[in-house]
Image (cartoon, rainbow, N blue to C red; front, side):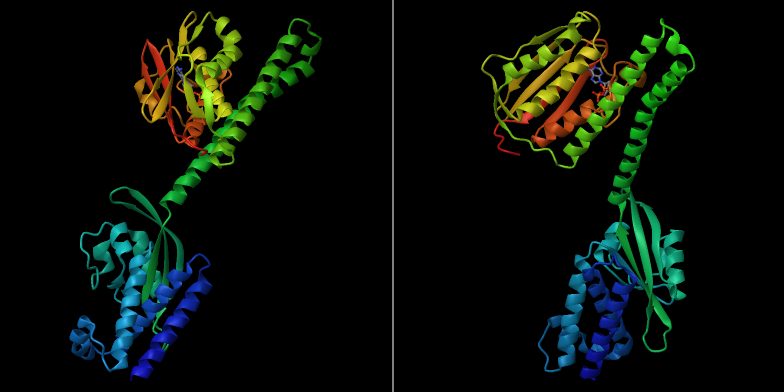
Amino acid sequence: MSRQISFVLAGAAAVVAVILIAISASLTVVLAVGLGFLAGYLTFNALYSKSNRQADAPRLAKGSVSTDSTSTEIFALGKLFEATLGGMREGLLVVDSDMRVIASNPAAHRLFSFSRNNLESQRLTELTRNPAIYTAFLDALKGNERSGVKVETHGTGRRIFDLRVVPLNNGRNGDTSGAIGVFFDITQIEKLERVRQEFLSNVSHELRTPLTAILAFVETLETGALEDNDDNRRFLAIIRKNAARMRDLIDDILELSAIEAGNVEVETEEIELGALINDVITALGAKASSRSIAVKNKVPPGTKIVADPRRLEQMLTNLVDNAIKFNRDGGEVVISCETEEDSTRVMVQDTGDGIPSQHLERLFERFYRVDRARSKEMGGTGLGLAIVKHLARAHGGEVRVTSELGKGSVFEIDLPRTNGRV
Ligand code: ADP
């Protein structure tokens, strides 16, 4: 008997594992092996009568070493089976031909927030009212494998699963005696895909606007305005402005992608902060003075900060540029710093209109603008703050904003003091 059962178990395990690997390239080997064991286990359950199991139960529970090799094999198989299913991240539900659960793993319990630990012998309909799940299992019981079934749950949070259900054949006459369902959690993948699509559509939209303007003015020039000496230079200037906007946008997109992909090296060193800020102020001086905005460097001489000089300059340029752009004429921009025990905080404060609080949380997202028209009018790409956020994080730091309507905003970059090469 022992030998027979071993063969059946091993055979069933191997056959199911091979079938599962063959039908699904995405099933992991661990999963396939786990399911193989599961199949073996279920086959064993079918072959091994209930009375025999009851007789063996006390011995198995104690884990006593039996001279009966069958018991030892069953015990080892059970343990391995349990460990495999317990370690799987994918939720697993096995039902019999009456749609009653005959096996499940902890991931299935967690994923569906089931209150009871023991799902066994409950009907699938008692566990979930989700028609997609039910239909997929029903189809599998009719012998049809179902894959790519999208299932959404709304327990503690919205989660999305890719459900795959395969029929469980009993191996004798090819009848379906149950079904195995595996729930892959694809919430994160879906989220990333959505972000990617949003980004693509934003980029296309952002590029399309200046391109449309360029084409329109070229057409105007072609259809007669070229000879109009009053307007032709003005139209050319508009074309130039829009082309420059496209270039800036593409530069920022490439920069952001490189930072996000981790392709940007952050090489930190000790820098004289005040001197670096002076460079930033000089570069933006013409822009500030054209609107009579005073930019003040209040960083005490000799203050040191550990950062990548080029990247820190880039972050501060973006923040000071915004502080000028969104300021009132004749306003002020103050750059200061605070040194904490384990971090240095650089602050850029302006006297602009401030930012309504409902926008603050999303301000560092790509293409997020409080006033889209105003940002574009000022030649903004909507990517500056996203670049600052990513660069601050690449330094192991963070960026924050506080703002008061009618008074102005303060942007802070916090960088760790003991910052080696990140
Ligand atoms: P932009 O290219 O539009 O400046 P950013 O990513 O740098 O893009 O900024 C995103 C948005 O945040 C801006 O469009 C603006 O609405 C808001 N913003 C940024 N800095 C300030 C500031 N200092 N004062 C008021 N609003 C600001």
